[in-house]
Structures are given as structure tokens and as C-alpha cells.
Image 1 (cartoon, rainbow over the protein chains, first blue to last red):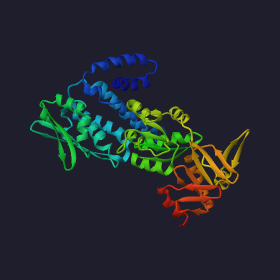
Image 2: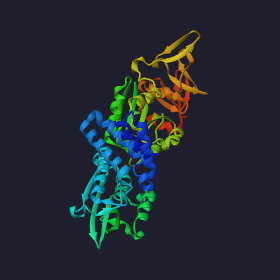
Image 3: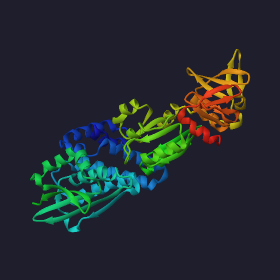
Image 4: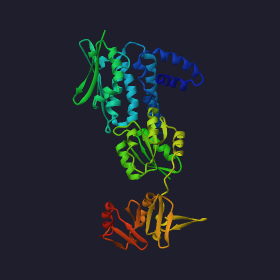
Length: 216
Length: 227
């Protein structure tokens, strides 16, 4: 259901008259996406909250509204077109994450702070689509959003022993993140070569979740 | 005038909702808060007619806050992205449910379900209505020495006798506190300058009769009377 709505949205807006055909096409595409993690990736909560942000911005700050629309379009495009591929370049995954964070930053305001520390040399590395996204969304939802004063999400990466290691840190308790996102993390773990490629722990007081992806 | 408190953690969403509300006639957003904790403080300070409440918030969630509202409870309108909590919200006494993205129509529909509490009255115009055949007799607060609840009805003690007054005792307690009335017992308000005597048995003697003071109110009565 979530995917139908999100997939239908941009087509319907752009192509009002042909929306029925577009809808059928997108529905076909939508059902083609088997990966449960991908299908649930943009949750109804996220989509409707984003649209609420957009509605508010249209009157107050049209330029910000344009930015939010662009971010949404980028997310929808990625979910519709790229998620069938087994892997994508890290650069694309980061762009997706940036679009997602752009929307969440507009929504949560100063409570959400983000640091991305990924060496440029690693941008060509391959990662499963939406894999980093899963971790970032958890960090925002369970690590930052529940805190009155908000907090910082840190994204980092390094290459070691032929594998790319990606991680996301947040100031949350970690425990709640595990409870809330069992499904998403379990799905990510399934996609990894070995279960222990997914790692969780505390680093400098921040809750950290990361994974290793061997490069061909 | 419907007085409203808005509780929503997202700055943009909060501002937008306040703007949409303020466009409507006959209402006024008296406070807005960014989390449940500050929201409860605003409700306690403002005593609004209605609260527009987000559900997913840091700290106290909207569905938790609804069980922490003071009496008299303001009307509750939930604002949320996804109606998974609808049943819980209505069970908790919500009058309406606004889905994000919120619209002007949605806000207007929510407002239509809210009825303002009585207008705060100009102090000098306050009257206690006594229904008589074909007319309503209006008593000035100064004409009443005490107001006593009797099986849900209120009876005003006046020099002319004891007259039935519309409205509950707590309704009148709020309004008459500005007129020198004090609750002296679970079932009685007294106009303090009508008190002539305090007996050793914790009774108040008025020109119109005697009233018991409950033990837990005795201290306040003595303090207020300077005893």
C-alpha cells in the first residue's frame, strides 16, 4: 500500500489525465519489487509527514518547498528504478540518503544535525541499494526524534581488507533502535554475506550500527 | 471565543497549524508547545477549550498526554500522519482526528466539533439565575450569603430565603471566586464577608443560617479570615 501511494504520487501530479495508465504501470512496477525492506522503506508516516512539511513550506518558504519536492522526487525515483539492482555505487546511495535527510531536517528543524564523513575515494564502491538508508532512518527515528533536544547523526565509511565498512551513529539508547527496527535490520543482515557483517555497539557514547560489504 | 493550545514537535508543522487556526474566526491560539512536557504546562496555565495534539513526539507522546489532562478536560483533536492510533485516540475522548498533510477544510471541521466553555464574564455582570414561573430572577453575588449543593441542585441562601440556582457548585465556584466566595465544604461556597461567627464546632454562622466547614478546608478559611 505504501509503495502504491508513493509511486503513484509524482505520476499523478505530473500527468493528471494519463494518471490511470501511469498508475497501472507503476502498480506493475511496484509489485515487481520483491524486497520487503525496499517496499517498506518509505513508510506512510514518512511520506505524509513530508507532504505536511511541503504544505507548510509552500506558503512560508517557496524555495524550501521546491527543495523538498526535489528531494521527494529523488527518493521516489530511486525506489522505483534503482532498487531492483543488486548493488549501486555508494555515491548514489549517499545522494539518496542526503535527499532523505533533507526532508527530515526540514521537518525536525534544528533538532536534527548530520555529519557525513565519507572519503571521496570510496564513492565508487558498490553497496546494496537502500542499505545505508535503513541505518540512517533508524538513527533519525529512534535515536534523534525521541530526544527533546535532538541530536547528531554521523555517517562514516572506510575500506579495509577488501570490504567497505559503512556505519551510522546516533545519540539514542540503541536498545529502542533494535526493538523498533528488527525487521529492517534483519532484512539487511540477510543481504549480507555473513551475519557478523552487521555490527552494533557503542562508540564514544554514541550508538553505532554498521555493516561490511565485500567489494568484487 | 474558543481558546486553543497547539502541541506539535515539528517547528514548521506547528507554525503552519497555528496559522491555519488563526485564519478562522471565533478562536484564538493562546499557546503552542514543542513537546508534551511544555504542552502540559501551557494547558495548566491557559486552561484552553481545546488542544490540538501531535502523537509522535519526544518524551510524552500524544496518546499518553491525553490521560494526563487536568479537569475540566479540554476538547482534544489529534494531528498525525497516519491513523493507526485512531481507535485509541477516540477511546481516550478525542473529538476529532486530523490527518497530515493538514488542510484548511480539515481544521475547520475539527473546530466545528469544539464548543467553547462559557465566555469569561465581566466580573460586575455576573448574576445567579433563579428560575421562576415565566421569568428568571437574577441574583447579584452580594445578595447571596452561601451557595449550597443539594442533590445536584444549587441553593442560594439569601435574606429573602433559599432559592434554587441553575448550574453545578463547581461551575459557580470558578465564577464566584472573584466575588469573595470560598469553598468551605464539599457541598458549600460561602461569601466570606457574610460570615458573622466561627463556632468552636467549626461552623460558620451567617445571617441566613449555619454551615459546617470541612476539616481540610478549615485551615484555609481561618487563614483567609485572618484568624
